[in-house]
Image (cartoon, one colour):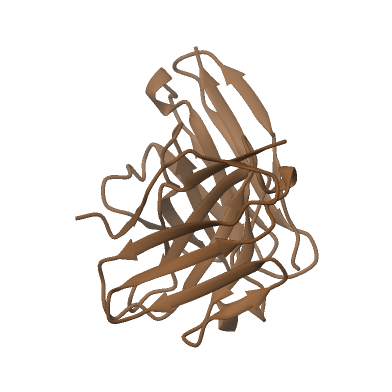
Amino acid sequence: RKEVEQDPGPFNVPEGATVAFNCTYSNSASQSFFWYRQDCRKEPKLLMSVYSSGNEDGRFTAQLNRASQYISLLIRDSKLSDSATYLCVVNEVGTDKLIFGTGTRLQVFP
Amino acid sequence: GAVVSQHPSWVICKSGTSVKIECRSLDFQATTMFWYRQFPKQSLMLMATSNEGSKATYEQGVEKDKFLINHASLTLSTLTVTSAHPEDSSFYICSAKDRVSWVTGELFFGEGSRLTVL
């Protein structure tokens, strides 16, 4: 089983739609969780950290479910500029390393 | 956030040659930098952790003699791909943490270097 698993997509949604991605992780002791965004042929950039109580940043909401070992990202009112690959990232327990999922590709169309 | 700069962005080389990629932290000191590699449609894979003033720590399966890492100052780490072959063609990205992100866990990435070995 991969340490971090994501549905690769692509998710094709119209502008204004709400879309959600899930990600599962294998190590129940993981403590830090993030969503990064990566545009085509570019470096990843932090979208948001994921906190235990869930957190929201504008149109983006992240949730953590420790019991089921998954995190989610909800994007409301999708914009064309949201088109990118969204990477689920989890810390490797006991180290400073981050483990990246393969990413979920989102394509927002007009 | 912190700024990490990587150079070159693109490099094409012949098989058997060596290529050096530089990673600089522009507005902070980075005692530790991380080198990742990403093949098309795959996730970022950590290759090695670069430590200023000491030897790099390589991940399992990464040849230390092939991927030479030097972290001679607090703002510069270099990755040299020695005797490059076509299978080394990939997107190489460095990253670092600043003082705040050692607490938050966020990684700041360089722009990446796309290597094509002919």
